[in-house]
Length: 94
Image 1 (cartoon, rainbow, N blue to C red):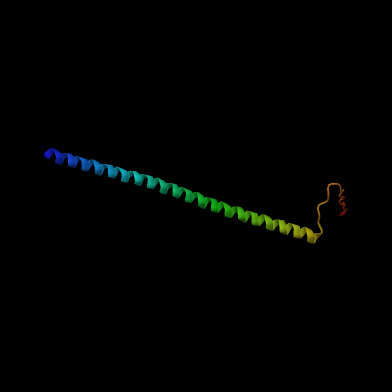
Image 2 (cartoon, rainbow, N blue to C red; image 1 turned 45 degrees about the vertical axis):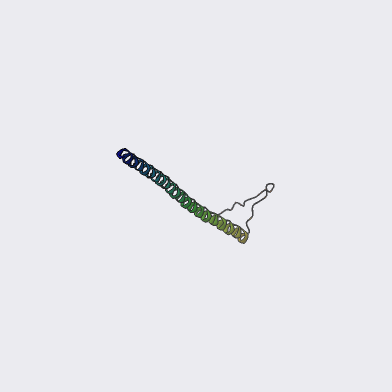
């Protein structure tokens, strides 16, 4: 009879160890998933910052292009075509 009690205790201990092992395994995989999520969040934040910087640079370039074209228009400047000859006057400032 004592053997059966000890056997029952051993079985309960083994079952408890199995459950604890399963819990530890799930917690380890949960920690891995949380670390992966944090890494993805960091990458997402970096990408959002990069998108913001590129958008600002694009806005600045578009603004410069508009200012440049407007200034050329106001000053009567134009780009000569490939077959035009441009003569620049040389002044005598003496």
